[in-house]
Amino acid sequence: MANKVKAVLIGGTGYGGSEILRRLLFHPHVEVVRITSVDNIGKKVGDVHFNLAGLTDLSFQELPPVQAVAGADVAFLAMPHKTTAKVVMELLASGVRIVDLSGDFRLRDAAAYAKYYGVEHPAPHMLTEGSFTYGLPELNREAIRQARYIASPGCFATTIALGLLPLARAGLLSGPIHTVAATGSSGSGANPQITTHHPLRASNLRTYKPLEHQHIPEILQTLRAAGANEDTSLEFVPVSAPLPRGIFATSFAEVPAATTQEQLNAAWKSAYANEPFIRIIGGGRQPEVVGVAGSNYVEVGFTLGPVTGATRRVVCFSALDNLVKGGAGQSIQSFNLMMGWDERLTLAEPGLWP
Image (cartoon, rainbow, N blue to C red; front, side, top):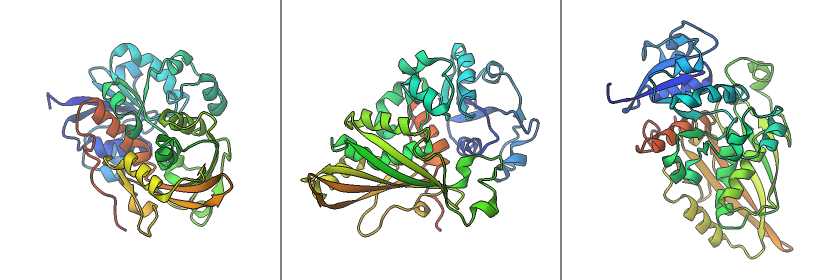
């Protein structure tokens, strides 16, 4: 293992940490050397993440950040928003590469961070300077290859942005977008809450943070970087769904009345024809969660509506696994690119069917 990249996972007891380990423990170029946490200290990985029992002798440790990354090449940070930024500030002098799964370094606007995350950012200059590269390969692949610090996108942000990215790149996205997206319970984290308690979730649908979700500015930032008009806005209603994994997003946008089905087919093909994890769904089927759950793949599709005055509506659909392409898998995809490897390493296998 002398030639392998040494990786540390900081914040390893959550579902995101489990998914990172499920992939990295089998990565041909990586050795996971340390896993830290604030709970389950001293327990073996398999005693917390039952699916990983017997696959590693590593245990969860409680260590200061600088000590945690000693001798490591890369640190994956799977900690809550607001906590992560302070840890990053301690790690910068160490020289370790960072892949951050929190929302603390995704935005470029410190005021938007303060508004949507409810606190002032401890290092606002790092946002405006773009110290972290936004880790959406379908948008920033070349920048990711040159990066040392990756801000991995949020689960809703990835789903919704990938559903709309072809319109943005084709110069067809402007004005208001309306999105409803349903997410699985694993997105709420490993610690039980009233909203993730099985009897209250298994047969239920409920919204939360309507029009106020913290991924709204992230989605708009992504779409504008891809070519959306500056007047593009987003009204987003997230929904808690009775499934463990997956996100399904439905987004409504208006395009010029002259837009044709052929133009949109070409836009989707141009955006995604060479993307290893994007599946354009058509031919009578629409995207669905069961096709991607447990995998790093994304299903996208659209329906073009009739002309109404100067515009016609496009309804964009997208589905992915919130823990994989919406979280840990995408962070590893960006890590692979950053290290100059095939981005599909440990991610190419399909999900379960059914």
